[in-house]
Every structure is written in structure tokens, then in C-alpha cells.
View 1 (tube, rainbow, N blue to C red):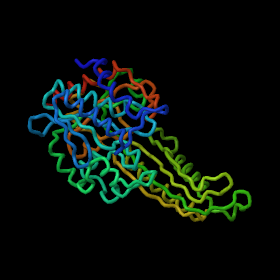
View 2 (tube, one colour; view 1 turned 90 degrees about the horizontal axis):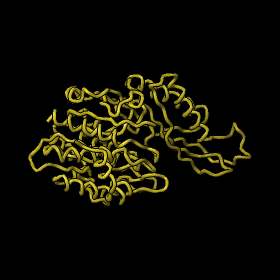
View 3 (tube, rainbow, N blue to C red; view 1 turned 90 degrees about the vertical axis):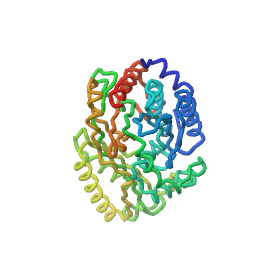
View 4 (cartoon, rainbow, N blue to C red; view 1 turned 45 degrees about the vertical axis):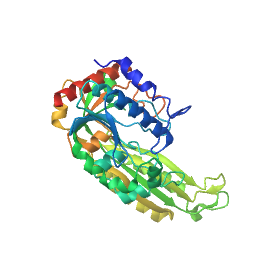
Amino acid sequence: MITAAELRDRLAALEPIGLGADGTTRLAWTPELAAAEAWFADQARAAGRRVERDPAGSLWAVPDADGPWWATGSHVDSVRAGGRFDGPLGVAAGFAVAERLPGVAVLAFADEEGARFNTPTFGSRALTGRLDLADVLARRDDDGTVLADAMRGAGVDPDALGDAPSWLPRLRGFVELHIDQTRDLERLDAPAGAVRGLASRLRLALTFSGRADHAGTTRRDERRDALAAAARLIVAADDLAGDDRDVLVTATRLLVEPNAFTTVPSSVRAWIDARTPDPARLEAWRDTLAVRAAGLAATTGVEIGFVVASHSPGVTFDADVRAAMSDLPELVCFAGHDAGVLATRIPAGMVFVRNPTGVSHAPEEEVDMEDAAVAANALLATLERLA
């Protein structure tokens, strides 16, 4: 029986890594992530697993027996100023399971959050051959560092990234434990749940190119205000969701230039996140917003770039995996996860842990470790049935 105390002890050495006054920050290809990967290696040794790194930089703790294996795990990177359970709890639970099931592998996928280079689910997408290699390797972080150079600095060869799919046949299937990032399980009064599938989701990368002018002397009809145009499109994006509570639209980030008190903004970079269980509804939202952007550019004189930075069409998890956890209540997840990426190629599923507040990607993220133990034991039972 996996206990709350065991999970708490497993996480104890990881939690200080990247922890600051504003939360936990462990971005891809950084010293903080390298320290978290050392924790992974320690856990693997204790579980009698050897550690291998695939061409995308994901870590595999594998049995001595030949594969393919059933696997579990999650990720150890984080968003900026994030919480302590999103990802690591699934890895810790995975090692607890692996110590009890000799034939199970544990994975920590590279750059699941995508917080540094806007490359979410990087490791699992590489494994399934769903990365645009030229695009992602050329991406830059806020400091101008190119992703390919960051990989090299972390000891991973970017030129080998295209070989990652050759590792996929080593897996029979994958089941991931993760915290619920909503209050759905709390409303069901359930400590753990099974995920039926993931909603469709996309991320837009928008650029607004106007002209810098004096804020106090430039008349309204002479302005090409990039920030005003961005604001109008952000409001339009939200309005297009209407009153449908299952269409979630969020303006997640803005970068404004020159960002000065007395200057009309000349350029803005903005990112908008949109999710819904209905793929057709999401596509219609995107297409309508693109038309609004073209119209706004024509009326404001601000050039607007409209790019889909990432798109996941949604997925329904494997019926046999879901049947193996039929004693848990089912729910739909609006977040992206590595298990969802793998589900397009191999049998996959997810177990969720109750999150009473629903808060995630924030320092206040919290789960009861007794609930986590219930979910971990459900994960153990599921992999016993499948294997």
C-alpha cells in the first residue's frame, strides 16, 4: 500500500529546487532542472532502475528486463513561479508504483510546461513525431537564447531530436498521475478520478506593429497604437466565447515596446490560450478571430501577425485503460498533458488527484497527501491489471 508519508518523503528532496519567494521555477534546460533530474536519478536507483535520456532530453527509468514496458510518470519542470505538485507528484507516485511492479518504467518528459520557449509537451511531442523541428529549435527565450543552444548547454544534442520517435516502440502504454487543475473532483467529493479525455486547445502568438509617438501631442486619428489594437483583439477573443462555460479563453502574456510613460506603444507581442472539448467550436473561434484581426488592422493601421503557436485537437483515452480504472469517477480535462500526446499513438490514460481549491500553476497549489495516496494506489491497481 502506497502511503501519504511515502509520497511526502519522496518529494521532500525535490521541493527546495527552484523554490523562491514567488513559488517554484524550474524551466527547461536550466541548472534548476538539472538538479531536479539528479533527484530523478536518485529515485531511479532506489527503485532498481537504470536511467536513460532519449533524444528529446526526456528521462527514462527503465527495468533490466527487455521492453516494451507499461510506463508511468509525468514531468519535473515548472512554469514560472508555479506550484510544487504539478508534474513532480506524478513522478514520485510513479516511482512508488515501480518499486512494487518490477516491469514498469518511469518517465520524466522534457519541457512539458513549455514556459521558456513556448514549447509545451516538448518531450512527448518529440517522441510521437509531432514537433516541427526547424521551428522549435530556432525559438528564443526572453534573453535571446536559442533553444538548440540551450539543449546543447544541458548536454542534449539538438541534431538528434528527430530520432526521438524511434524510442516510442519501447512503450506498451502510459498512465499518468496528475493533480486536478479544476475543482471537479472536489464537487464530486472524490479523492481521485479517471480522465475520459482532454479538451481541444490552441495557443495563438500575435504581433502588433504600430508606430511610437508622443502620448501627449499625437492626435487620435494620427496614431498607430499597437497596445490599443491588442486590447481590442483580446476583448474580441473573449467576447467570441459568448456564454459557453466550456469555451475558455485567456490572454496569457503581453510584451509591450517601448513601454514608456509618455510614448504611444509601437509594438506588442501577445499570447492567447483557448480550450474547449468541441474541436469544431475551437476552429470556428480561431477563424472568426482571424477575420476580426484583419479588420482591426485595416481600421487602425497596425500590422497584425496571427500565428497558431501550438494546437492539440483533443483526445479520448484508451478504452481498456479506462476500464482498468472503472472504479473511479470520470471527468474531462481542459489542460494539456504528456499522456494526451502519447494517446494518439499508444494506449494511455490519466488518474487525477483532488485539488480542493482548483489552484494550479501558482505557489498556492495544494493537495492533501492522503488523497494523493488514494490516487497512487489507483494507479498501482490500474497498471497491475494492464500488465
